[in-house]
Image (cartoon, rainbow, N blue to C red; front, side):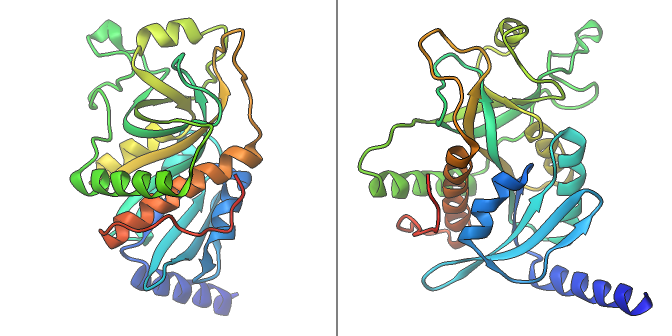
Length: 277
């Protein structure tokens, strides 16, 4: 038992030394993790902390390799926040955190299969307005989180340009803007209220805002890259669901391209990844 604990400690020490400046990529579900594992190479053995699982990986470029700490957190605000806190403690000089995977489309112009790149984040079900706070704001905390810095903006611009050049025509759109997260699903029963309260929000999920808050607390840069799998309140003529086998690889493709651009700080061609979308 002691030898096993000592070996685990050595592995974690090695991780903290070699992955101190890694980019952390969080997903909630194994299905969202799978395309990231397919597109990267193992750097060190995976390990588990609580309910979260961590995968030190390399994204291989032609002349470089990008250290990634993939985190499968499980679903929910607390699971995501605790897992990303652990990841930041391992990657002590973390270059940034990306939350990837699926989301529900909230804005009426959003369609399934679209990509949403978050620029700021609020809680769907936080309501302390009786004390003078904004809807979505936790008392004593900022109204929203996640203003992107210039490095993110340059990486996003380069990634979108590369992916657009590689895809002659795509059936999906890319949106940038506000994202919501909460402990409750937004459905046809509460979508009207949610849209009225957050009239510029594009999507909703159960992790991103909690991660954005953790990153704000630790002064780590953050963004979310989500693909829309379902619509919260679809119009009669809208397709309202798309399989995770389609949306998860699409989210991964955008997230990995952005991560590569953020790491190299130079414009890259679209990555040739072992993904289907």
